Length: 108
Length: 113
Image (cartoon, rainbow over all chains, first blue to last red; front, top):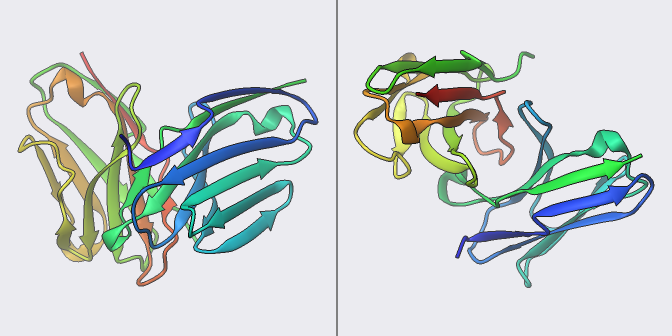
């Protein structure tokens, strides 16, 4: 079992829908990262969390340290949000352990 | 401030050949990480440099992989000899001091035929 589990693996949404991607982890962490990768593109860091909630534009990330769970929400989704969203947790030395990623497709 | 850069963006080599990947971290970032994603799998940690020293190389798959960071600036990852299972995307990331945030390079797609 991977130390970081994401769900769902694949997600198709209609433009405008509210989207939630979940991440659970089983190890102690220094911080949790949400990353985005567009097809053929590099990895972009969206959020880094160690507690609470962060918001950037239409993206919201929350973390519950006690439950070892984080969620990434996208409000008013748009086709340009189509990408792979990856949850990663920082371990000793801040090396990252990655989830398998969620492939999101937003249809217009 | 320039971001993390990687070269080449794509490399196609034959099994048994040697390939060297390069990563230039953000200036002043003493922490440098190598990760890779092989087909169908999640991204995995390979190793971590602090300046020129290898802090953690627990993720290096075998001795065909050699990473260096002479002078504590750019890093190279050499695969010799390459095998088919080495195909994937190799990412580099850098981090400053005690900060948690890592900045990723665009990756090098390695195809071994």
